[in-house]
Image (cartoon, rainbow, N blue to C red; front, side, top):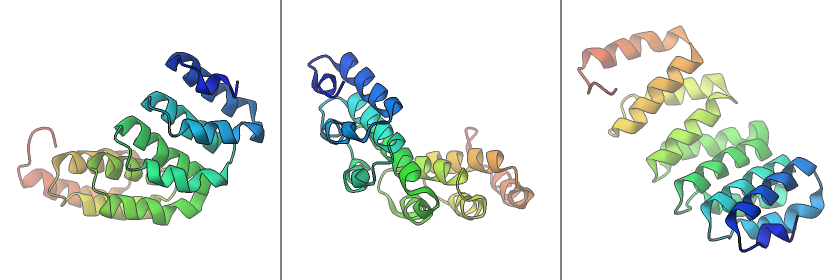
Length: 169
């Protein structure tokens, strides 16, 4: 399977990367780390997930680089993999991503992952995102606030609806 991750067929690479994560052998880590540099975003994504499944802390630096991947898919998988590898320690990184990352997609992904790790921090950041100039960030914050199901958000959401934002918000 480690050799199959370097196959010339993307479907084989992706399935091999997934299987290596499920098998749980740390011997797969070098092959999966190499796969993070593959040309195919799907392969990079699956490799990130499998490295997280294996608890491969040595993957933290390359996964942080993958946050700026040209593929939103691969970057999104990196957010989830980092959170899984770092556990509760990921809260600071996720907070920084929500507040400062250049990609709105990564900001939204980080907020969604954070909602599963730290209710209070996710609530505070989602409320702050309601004032964001980017509509997709506002929409994501509204969805997260709904998922958090915290009545503290109700007055802020009501204010937002009274401002007359776009129908999608």
